[in-house]
Amino acid sequence: MAHYKKGADAERELIHLLFDKGFSVVRVAGSGKTALPAPDLLALHKSRILAFECKAWASDSIHLPVSQMQELLSWCERAGAEVFIAWKYPRRGWFFLKPEHFSKAEKNYSISLRHAVAKAIDLEVLTGRMAVLPH
Amino acid sequence: MAHYKKGADAERELIHLLFDKGFSVVRVAGSGKTALPAPDLLALHKSRILAFECKAWASDSIHLPVSQMQELLSWCERAGAEVFIAWKYPRRGWFFLKPEHFSKAEKNYSISLRHAVAKAIDLEVLTGRMAVLPH
Image 1 (cartoon, rainbow over the protein chains, first blue to last red):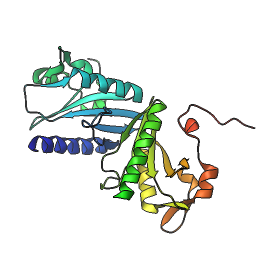
Image 2: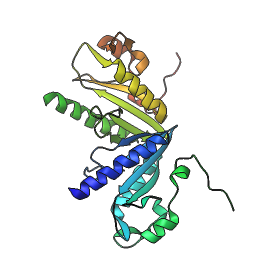
Image 3: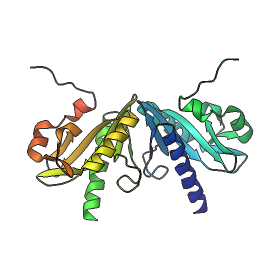
């Protein structure tokens, strides 16, 4: 229950972050439980569709089973959605990651905290409010 | 509970109808219960966002409180979504209606079954698989 609550609190926080950037946000009913795979959250704005899989883990790395990542990717391709894995690290904030930031092993896609820190996309960039300039 | 179940069964049926037309479909968690208003279902395909408010009523007309319709319209405008009211009439199938098909009275937007039959949009047209030809 504590694990579930931590995940639910993180999702709620992300909903508000995205709402504040001008998106309409929904939590997907039964995500993670139903036969039909789907992301945890959707954020929509001007026909842009962002799909989020949320993780709230205080660990050295996060993992997604290969089957789950593949289902997520097919779901998003069918929808025309951009997919992000949103990792909430307690007291360090959010790391927004793309599937290509993960390494594939036999059973899991995974990324270390060190790589997540290096690769994470800024929320302002992700939501289209800022762009990374060449330097 | 019977009323809730009828609504849930209708939503499930609509999810499958839209999935069969190539859309990624989600049921929105806590729709109708949360402080944040949102439609019941979202169907997504190639950056097209369809939002559905579902009604499963065997009655001469359906009604939406003015406040609910207005919240639905603002939500969809923010999201860049097209909004439909999907009325499942037991043993007569689905009527897909636009907000402008409803008449506004003091407290409710409403539409009669007779008007719904006349105005309803074909699912093939709604999902972009067919177009109505001039005649």
